Length: 124
Image (cartoon, rainbow, N blue to C red; front, top):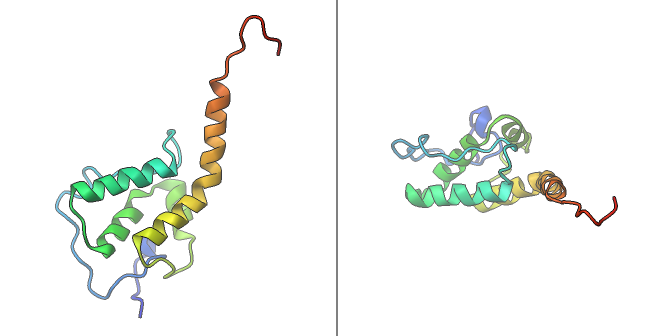
């Protein structure tokens, strides 16, 4: 049976007894706010690298750290997922990517457009 969790972890299914966070976990935790040119894919990769570096093996710790890595609009979007709907990091990553994919694609399209240059012999 899922346990009652704080609102910041609302979509997560967590065990009755939580494993402790690693020491100094917030120091290098990658953050995602949906801005600054960091795509959802880049955040997932940075987060997985972070888990490997600090040697996190417990699923509940990984899920809670992921929730803590989200800020502003991305946190609000995460908390809008149905309560107790995410049970593992793979599922969490997929939902996260699916919810940000359209925005990421749009931002990448704008970046690509900004990079276009008209040559002197080309017309508009």
